Amino acid sequence: MPKCVVAEDENLLREALLEQLGKAWPGLEIVAACDDGASALDAIIESQPDVAFLDIRMPGLTGIEIAEAMKEHSPHTQIVFVTAYDQYAIDAFDKGVVDYLLKPVTYDRLSATVQRLQSRSVKDLNAVAGLLQQLNIGSSKGIAAAFQSAQKNEPLVWLTASSGTETKLIMIDDVAYFKADNKYTVVMTAEGESLLRKPIRDLLDLLDANIFKQIHRSTIVNLKAIASIARDDSGKGIVKLKTRPETLTVSQPFMVLFRNM
Image (cartoon, rainbow, N blue to C red; front, side):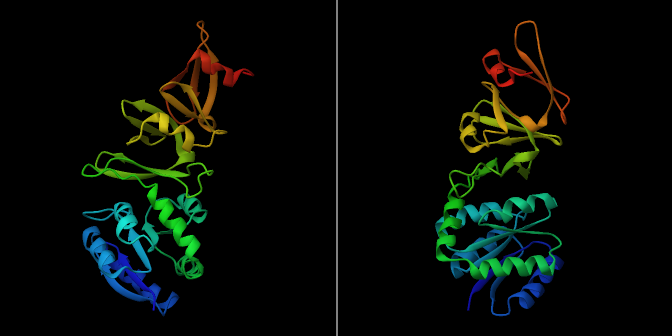
């Protein structure tokens, strides 16, 4: 009988998920239902479950931080993240080997996830472990993380970055630009800035080269986020963005990208 750990800090949502799981997967044994990250990780290490449903935001440890620890302590446990992030984020998870459920969880969506979990092969489980190897969570300060696709030739689809005391899931398509900040990188979206604990030079190989272009030694821009480009007297470019009020400078060597302007 397959074993499962459920981690959700909201009692009503946890009970609802347990009830739906009982209907969608009658043969699944729930070995632990936890309301915080630390107890969930302890339960996973002890029971080595086949699957874990992890709320991304919980007291103590987040679901993503638990997943990071699992790559060492329970690498073959399949992971389903459960969170209240926006609907459009689901598409990225649908293309990967880690599943995603949006709160409030619907029975149809849960049933589809259960079918994928049940049909996943050993090869797929190894891909899950490989994907988690790319997860780079900051330690005590909960600083930014990047989540690379399991296939090395696939560009980055989403990342997590810190904003104050919160860890945000950010879809790559929503990034207007990246800007170097010493050893870190500032991620700019329409909503504001977050911090990624990764130098900007390491990002280029992870991004879709058809969409993200370096325009300065300290700046990578999303071409889809550009509203207009002008050239100043010195030959440098000035980029206006669709969703941000500030402008970006294009260094003269990078103006070749916009030769047809």
